Image 1 (cartoon, rainbow, N blue to C red):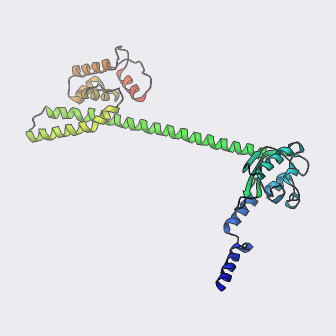
Image 2: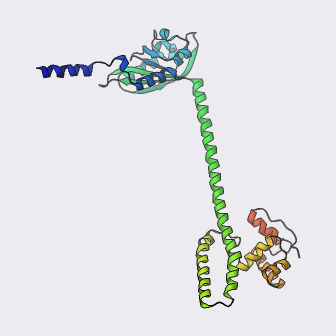
Image 3: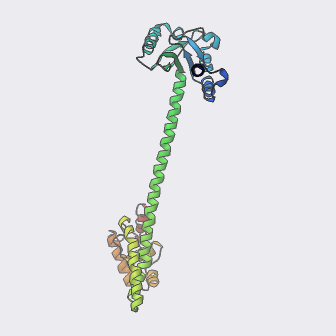
Length: 306
């Protein structure tokens, strides 16, 4: 018997409403949000009578909160649009819809009409009965400002995306240029000397080491060769050496001294370079052509120096 009394007492405590002091922090946050947001908000009974209104809605319509709660939502709609609102509220009360938006004109206290977007959402209890309607109203000017802000944000994001795409393309171009430079340097600064070493007197161990160096170097530059641009792909190591010296402004006689070759040999190499580049006209300067290929600029037609 005593156990039943305790059980009954426990059930009563579970169903009793919580006192005001037991409101959770979340309730306080929602209440502050409702009161401080700059969009007009209200809570109404299912028939449209106001229960609670926030400061933004009062300021928009020119009412004190206590005066506004004396009205119903339909009282604030311009007369020729009230039937539309009544029909919408009937659908919400019947459970046909949970949320609805219309664009009516609300009447201010001074008689002026304010157009905007009116949103009505159903608030139901645990068993599905409609207890309240949550109403929001955003003035047309606010909607325009919101759309403009969204457009500005979208444009800003678009500019950022464009900048990132440009940066990625530039990084890819830099990466390819670095690979091309590495390949060119390997062919012009390393391979020719390996060829000279191979033609010199070497013992078996030295020649083995030289072959290993050449093999490993070829493995390193082989992937680079596949991605290198077509400017120097068909150049021999000697032609790459001469081309680099020509780009540095060295004359034929100077190149011959640097490489330890005859002037006639350097002239022959220069001729082969011109043929591979399609420079059949003598009036086109070889150095200008080589520099323009590296920079992507148009070729300047100049006379070759002697």
